[in-house]
Image (cartoon, rainbow, N blue to C red; front, side, top):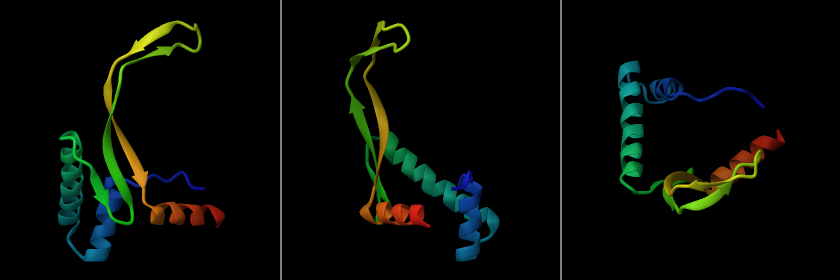
Length: 100
């Protein structure tokens, strides 16, 4: 297992290598895709990327939580959360990577 994190710059470099766009054009393309995804999610839409997965927004209701240290009950306000559901292909690929 590696501690590497894939960054925007890594994605832009991959686009530069694979597609042949300049580094600036590659960075702009990655930024544009991420902006489109975030705008859609912020607007309440889902984002589905075939063979990868689906990002969606879920509304969570208000509830009573408990501070584990003191046992005190604390109200948790309603909120919107981002969730990701990987495709079966992505699940299989990740599982296969764990075996090697």
